[in-house]
Amino acid sequence: MSAVFRRLAGDFFSTILFVVVWMATDNVLVATAVAIAGAVAQFVWAKRSGYELGVISYASLALVVLLGGATLVTGDPRFVLVKPSLAHFGIGAIMLKKGWMTRYMPPKVMEFAPDLPVAAGYWWAALMIAVGAGVVATAATGDLKLWGAFVFGVAPAAKVLAFAIQYAVFRIVIGRRIA
Image (cartoon, rainbow, N blue to C red; front, side, top):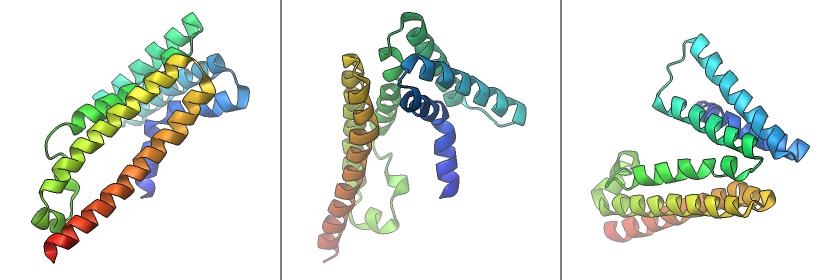
């Protein structure tokens, strides 16, 4: 489990830097510059350490530099604020593949309710796309506090709630089918 959290922290390093510096300074331009520098430093460190970097690593660096650069050049934070939506839209698009969730299901689910992971997969895709749209909508307002509340409050809460609902529905449906 700690390996998962280390990987997530690595994947979101520049975002974490951005939020920490933004909270400490209340200055989105300084936070953006630090996030860009952090992303570049992390990338250079990974290359020098011999870590294998995939397409996602290159794309992530490009997004941080391009959107962060646009924020620095224009002074408009909306460019950097929209970045999390791209991840949500991308993940949502991947989740539109029928049956993507089946590989994560225990045998009992696949035996008694093979239809549930397919339906749940589409609901997760819809949720991710809706969250992405929410990120864009809050970023478009330019209100950093609203954006922060959505990205770090509403979006994670929606995912936790969705997981809890999915778990309950799976338990109820499979219990009824077994009975």
